[in-house]
Length: 263
Ligand code: DGL
Image (cartoon, rainbow, N blue to C red):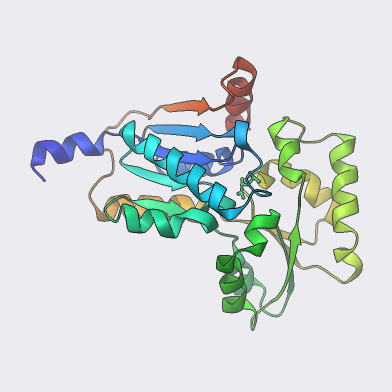
């Protein structure tokens, strides 16, 4: 690549994709570790939730949206959705081997490192938990921690509605978590990028002694490493810009994106 072309590529934005609003929890971490980068965030709220759809559909939707971020000039893409990562990232890597592409997976590693021997609940969409990728991840850590997968159908919808601390949410979480709390829980892994937005309520329901893990900051650092490796970090000194797009293209939706980003 010529020097000029390289400089041009460095100045291109990073694409961030999720089935809806959840990936904004990862975007916040990306901006923290790469404040000088520009970002394009796309959420596919029209087709959300992905977590109850068949794998082929999730794969096709994800490929389509990642390609559209590339067509808008993204120099790298973060699939900020555990569900879309398990369904599509391996295929995307084969299709675009040169593209810095980072997915997200439930953060079992920090739980295993910090609390060996503990009982860890993994909250995720039904689809993430069913995937082979998750089974392989569990196998990697099951001799270090006791893993309890907990599918949470319906939870991401609270975030999509912007309902982050209402009574309905509290009731939903109590009903969901009470059975797994019959035995002591040491940690909870948030295996869906929507869930960090309801982290406080989860903490209230499970109590202060339970450590909550999420994979957002690790994913952001991985993207920075990948861009650095390819010499693609933006050299500009001023703060980057973030542009939001959503398949449900209404002012309310975009206002919710911005307000979640500011949280
Ligand atoms: N945010 C997505 C994840 O991390 C899933 C939400 C959905 O079901 O669409 O898994």
